[in-house]
Image: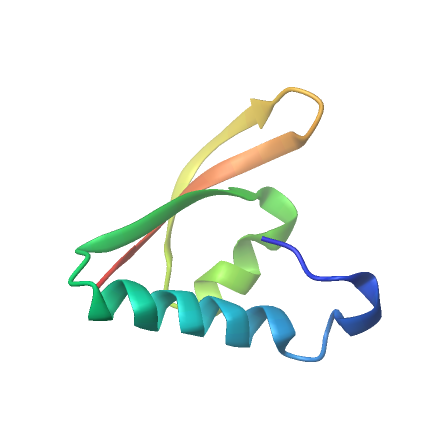
Length: 71
């Protein structure tokens, strides 16, 4: 997930992530998972995601970690 640089740091990404999680809960989904850039892991931790300690590389993108949020 990413937001335009012009609105980074204004809570847009957090509000978007909350809306996505709310929708997943309404759909009775058990969990949401993704691969997060290592540089964005703290963002997802603040939103209640569990972070895998394993780091892996996605070619041409960089290091990532698996993240999961149970509902």
